[in-house]
Every structure is written in C-alpha cells, then in structure tokens.
Length: 102
Image 1 (cartoon, rainbow, N blue to C red):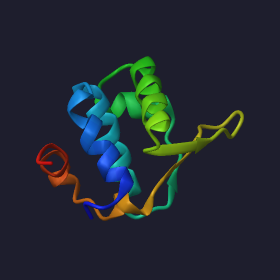
Image 2 (cartoon, rainbow, N blue to C red):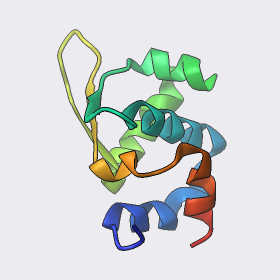
Image 3 (cartoon, rainbow, N blue to C red):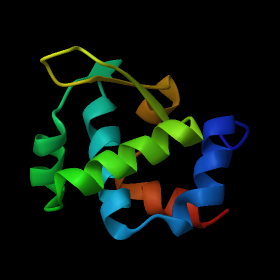
C-alpha cells in the first residue's frame, strides 16, 4: 500500500490539513468504502463535519489540486465525486495513524 502515489501525496500533505479538512477527507473516504462514486452536496458535507460550505469547497479544491479526488459537475445537481479504488482499502479508523506514521 505504501507504493501508491496517492498515499505518498496524502502523507506529504496530511499534517498540513486543518482539522476540518481532515474531517472532509474522512467523510468522503467513509462514503467511498463500498462505492466508486458519490454525490453529496457541499452543504451535506458541511453539516456532517460541522463546518461551513466555504470550508468544504476549499478543501475539495485542494484535494482535487493534489490529485486526491476528482468531480464531475452535474449542473443543477450536486457534483459527482470520484476517488481512486485505493480509498476502499483504507480502514477509516486508522487513517490518521496511516498518514502520520510515514
């Protein structure tokens, strides 16, 4: 698992993420555990992490820029978010341990 380029990117940047950005990432990983794509609204993500829609939008832009996730705009509907199959291999309870013990 350590040879995955996405894991390398996450390990390099995870410690710099704010706690709310980490919550956004954890929530998305949780959603992706049994799916190839998800489509929560930014408002839904914000509500789940107890943060603002702006914070969620900023986190998503950062994650996309780092290559952690991608999305497709669906017009009047929420975006369709896509993540690598790698994220289904991560045990959500261990993500902090995996990413901070590089």
